[in-house]
Image (tube, rainbow, N blue to C red):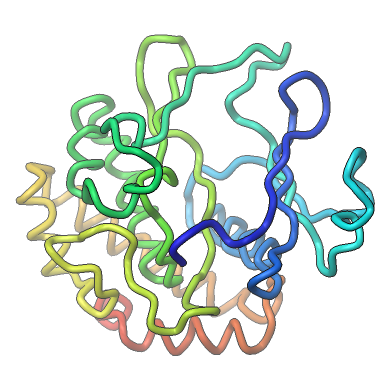
Length: 257
């Protein structure tokens, strides 16, 4: 999906906001519900996900009536860039890291470039988390993991860490032929996402192959188990579940497990 999902994101509660609220999309059906389901599934797979909840737009204070009356629910995300007292924690997305204008967030860097920075800044733990997210988003068919949807956070004001996960949406549920947002070993085709390509990715980014492939295998196994157990109990329509199942059938990594 070449731009955000057509919804509106606003901070709510206190100066600067304690929560981010993402309202229903005017372009696609049930996007907040989709993201809520994918983030909960990501948490079950072992990914670092902030506190989230689905809310009725009419329950969000300060919205104009025409927004409060939008059909569907809104997604509320607890801000992870604030300390308990409300002080800001420095955070920068990878468009900022690479000095890329937002309109070029799909074009000017690749997943290899992100991984190289994470490896240099935070070593193996960051690469494990990065690999989990990369694999997870390939498996759900998220074609919107561009530079602004990966961030660094500085909890102590000095050392960079990979920030908690956000903006996980199965875009293939709306755009069946969607592709990856950034190049992955010179390809954006989900159908090329395999263990062999991950091995080539690790070599190109100078990452420990054993760490990348081991994390990928573990994440895929956990994902397939959790998806099989939960898919009919998540906030997804039958059509969305069917779209993700169809997508999984064309992902080599899901068949290699």
